[in-house]
Image 1: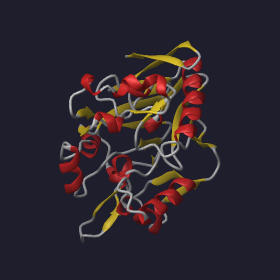
Image 2: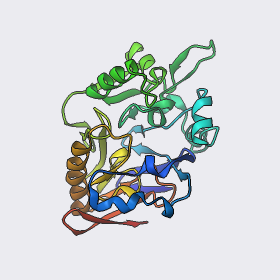
Image 3: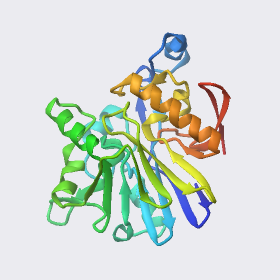
Image 4: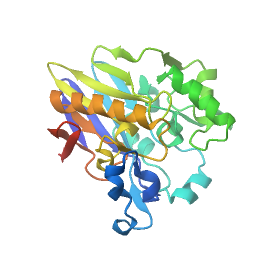
Length: 282
């Protein structure tokens, strides 16, 4: 799915489907949305997607959340019935993008389904950066949180996905809540889902904006301010960040990208009333 934003060309790249239990993927933080967990409305498993974002223009090639990658993921393929091989890296080749051409990789957080493609197995069997010229942008508190999580056997993180980047001095750590990586690309800490989760906003007042929500709002099932996922670490923090960035997106007319939507990946948030939003897919 390709579209233009001023001088920028953006491609939403599908990394493939996997399956989750609906009671895991949809979590209710407030009682008034308890109907979301009515299991009679769902099949035993639901298919979810993964959508990376490629940006080309202004002399830059940028990838946001490159997905799972091509390192062996036997346990995850089995547990989540994950499509394999994954699709982002082959799609880049089809789009004419060589790995050496990627300048920046923006990571919303370090869960394996979002950042696994940051590293790959080299010719000598060593783990190395997939995009050798790129700088990798991540919140410092996310790296710190991932390292703490590894010590508690949290299976959402796999250190081979990001520690080789740190060892190779390829990571640029963001310490501020809000930071401009480029004049037309900014990152904004949200927390909630993970310690250093951030959203990405692309564009300017002249071109309009695109908001990559990542796991702040992964699908339309999480449009309610009081709903989220069982993976979310801090529900109250999540709700406050959703309220802030959904309002911004709707009132500024941003185009929203939903990372885990198998369909309806791209669209606009329509504010019906305070804390009440609808998604108009395009």
